[in-house]
Length: 127
Image 1 (cartoon, one colour):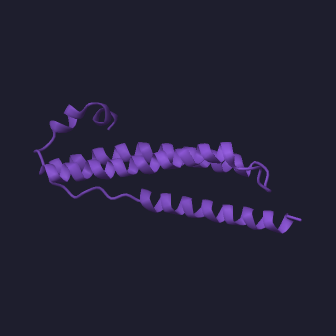
Image 2 (tube, rainbow, N blue to C red):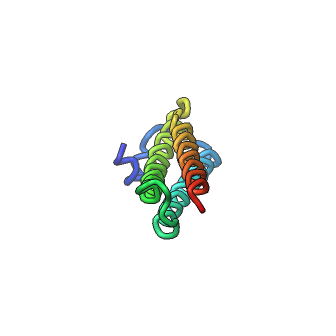
Image 3 (tube, rainbow, N blue to C red):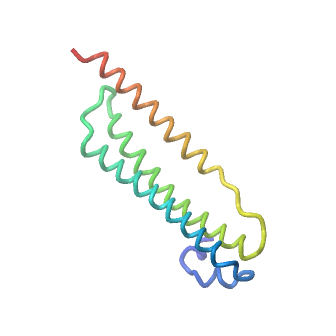
């Protein structure tokens, strides 16, 4: 699996060349995931640098580290999904399924709820 990430020729040795439009669409999907990962990393850095201390201890740091880790996970997952999809197209098999979009959405939703709770607590405590 890792060899497929670092050696593009390894992928070319498997199966037959798919229609280039499908390979290019796979690359565009990969790049969209990379942009999402970069946005999460940027959000993590912004949270670490610009969020004021929040009412719950270490909440700012938890948010920053969570976003940074999620961004890294998205980037790694993008490479894995690209490779698996390219291989499936070359072999003429079903495209791989993934629960990762669901997990990503759930984590982001949980993070948003955590922020809502923090904002409500801060507004209640404000003079």
